[in-house]
Each structure stands twice: as structure tokens, then as C-alpha cells.
Amino acid sequence: MSNDPSKDPRRDSKDGSDHDSISERYETVIGLEVHVQLGTKTKLFCACENRFGAPPNTLTCPICSGHPGVLPVPNREALRFGILAALALECDIQGHCKFDRKHYYYPDLPKGYQISQFDLPFALGGGVRLRSGKTIALERIHLEEDAGKNIHAEGHSHVDLNRAGVPLIEIVGMPEIRSSEEAHDYLESLKRSMRYAGVSECDMEKGSLRCDANISLRKHGAPEFGTKVEVKNLNSFKKVVAALEYERRRQAACLDEGRAIHQETRLFDDQAQQTRIMRSKEEAMDYRFFPEPDIPPFEITAKDIDEIRPLLPERHWERKARLMEEAALNDYDSMVLTLEKETADYFEAAWKALGPGQEEAKLTANWVMTEVLRLSNEENVPLSKLPISPEDLAALCRLIQEGKASNQAGRKVFKHMVKTGEPPAKALEALGLAQISDPAELEPLVRAVLDKSQKAIKDYFKGKKKALDAMKGGVMRETRGRANPGLVNEILLRLLEDLRED
Image 1: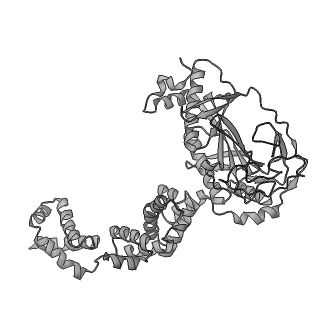
Image 2: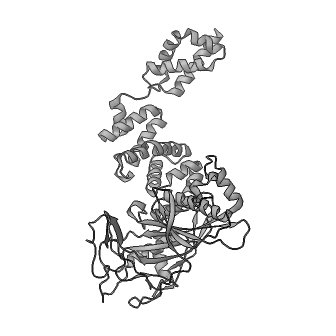
Image 3: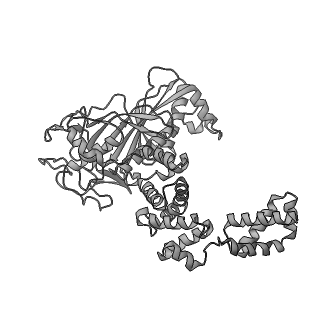
């Protein structure tokens, strides 16, 4: 049998049978190590700007480019962001911690070592909550500086040190993830937690969130973990899932044939959609950690934590649960509205402006999830920069709630508001779409339609429900969609009963 699982006939089934058969034979064990760039204004140990997209090697100084004899000065804001992230993940903040030197050689690491944290990180424990309700425990979070970036193109290699020295937190998860789907859920939840806390953009395309995955297989019930393989170069959630699924199949094929899994580091080849070996890792690398001599150990006091804790907003899972309870939103709607803090803020501001009730919440949620998010995506602008404020949306929803505009008319008004900036009532008037909700005005129109609908009336009396819809449609056409549908239905039923009695 080939070593390439892509040629294994068991993986070709589209009904998921390959996935299920592996699950029957082996338990998948996954642990993720996630690096999150902190959104500070400056780097971790110098005053260079922390910014993405500048020309190569323009955001550097002797400290972050590793000149001999320079002294690092820790960025207090980076530690504050790190503590905020740890609080968001319910970690235990450590009172005593220090920086260490982690030695290895690579072209993008000009000092020959990375300032990180080894045995005394600033945060231990905590966890990441999945949508299923399961919590994946964390081992630790530590603070460290980023390396530069190697760029390989057209047969040449270049080094850009703009990223060198940018503050990172490394979030080390316990090996409690059991599928690629759970890994995706874990990363989504973790990203949301960091964005809610305001510590990072977590933009994988910009490298502000990066993930390494460790995966192994073992027989169900086995007390020991299998030999783990580390997969690097995972710069999107989709690649994380694809790499883990490939490794799962590859390792299962090896074990089925009685071959050993070798501890190694692999890269994910996006074009081939498979992992390939980067280096063997028979033993853990010796990074020769020792305490950073230029930065003394430091204390994080209870007072420090108490000053930072009020800055932590409501966590995304807490907000989702509250919206389900207070607004009576279902699981899906509350999930969509809390994917981003900005979306949840917009929704709650509009809901508050419309009214506190659950009907108002549902109406507002529908408009935010459809028209508002659609507009934001089409224009590629954040909700805060949309031409329609939460108060504008609430005013439009109020027109619909009061029967002054139909949902169809509301969508036209919404588009008009986007183009002109006019308030909803004025836009409704300008478009001539005000809904007819006066029974005295509607009843003659309904009678006129009934006079032309003798066949539909006979069909209705024969029990054909579609006949009522046909007559209702006639009224809507006569009024160009401006008639209040509920009132039209009420008048139709009353007049039809009068005809039945006659």
C-alpha cells in the first residue's frame, strides 16, 4: 500500500465512511499552539512602531535588529494586553515571572536567541470554550518577541526585520481536541476572545494569528499518547483542518500497516493539500534556556490585575447566552450576532433604541443579519463606518413595526437611506412607499378585487386555500405592494364570510 493516504481507496468515499472507519479504530489527539500578535503601538523591547505593511526593514532599530550591546526595555502596554488576554481565557495570573533567552539560529533571528518565557510564564491554566459547550484546557500563556520574516522569491532569499520584536503571546493548549472540526471551533472561539478583549486583530493573512498543530493517534482506551507530529505553516483555519485531516489519514495508514510514526515537524503544502517532512525531531530541541540577564524578574500584583480587569468586556460566550435569555434569540441568531463584538454592539444599540421587548429584538436581529451585514460585506467597511447608524435602523424597524412600511418597502427604504443619508420616514415619503394601514382606505380596494375574482371566490368556498392567496395578491398588485398584508387578509376573510352568508 502507498504511503500517500491520498491514494488510499478508503479516503475516496464521499459519505464520510473513511472518517468514520478511522474513528472506530483510533482516537485522534490534537494540541494547538497559537501565537497572537498584540496590538500595541510599539514593539516589545524598543520604541519601533508595531505596524503591518511598511516597506521591508523600515521599522527597525539597533535593539530589534540585534546589534551587540543594546539593552531591551519591556513594553508595559504589552504586558497589560497579555494580562487582558489571560483574563479573557480565565487563566491564573502568576505573581512572579521572568523573561528567558531561547537560543536557536535562523536568518530572521539576528540576535541568535529569542526573548521568551520558559519556566515562569505570566499565566497558567484557563480554557477555550467551544460551541458544543466543551472547554479545552490551556497549559499556559507566555509573552515573547516575534522573529523577523524570511521571504523566498525568484531564487533568492530576503529577510525583513519589521516584525522582529513585535510582542506575541503564545497560547499553549492541552491535547484535548479530538477532531479537526473541534480544532476549527477552538480557533474560532480563541480568535473571538482575543478580538473581544481588544488585544489583537487576529488577522491570519497579516500574520497576527499563527497556529502550529500537534497530532497523534492511539487505540481507544490506550493510556499513553501516540507519537506526535507537529505541523507548521498553517496560516488559515481551512489549512488547519486540511492538514489535520491529511495527517490523520496518513498516520492511520502507517499504524494499519504496522509501521512506526516518527516524531517530526512537517509543513503543509497548500497546492498538494498534504503535509511533507520539514525536519526529524527524535528528541526535543535544546534551546539552552537561561534567564534573560538584561531584564530582572518582575511581579504582577493583585492591584495590577484589579486595575486591568474592568477593561475586560463581556466575553463572547457570555454575551451569546445573555442574548438567548434576554432577547429570546435562537442559538444560530445569537451566534451570528456575537461573532464580532462590533456586530453585537451595533445590534444591542439598535435594539435598545427600538424598544426592550423580545419582538423588537427579533425584528432588529433580522435586519442586522441580512441588510446591515450584507452592506458591510459589500462595501468592505466596518459597521461603525456605515452610513446607517443603529438609531437609523431602529427608526426604520419602528416604521415596519407600526405598520407604516412593509418589509419589502423597508428594504427599498434601506437602500435609499444608504445612497442619500435621509432618515427612514423621509425616505419612505420620497419613495411613495408608505404602507396603507387604514381599513377605511383598504376596504374599497379589496371589494374591487373581489368583484373581479368570481372564480377565485368559488374555489375558496370549495376549500382551495390558494384562492385566498390569489385574491390577496390582487390587492397587493393594485396597491403596488403598499397594502398592509395582515389587514388585507383580515378584510378579505370578513368580506368572504359575508358573501358566504348571502
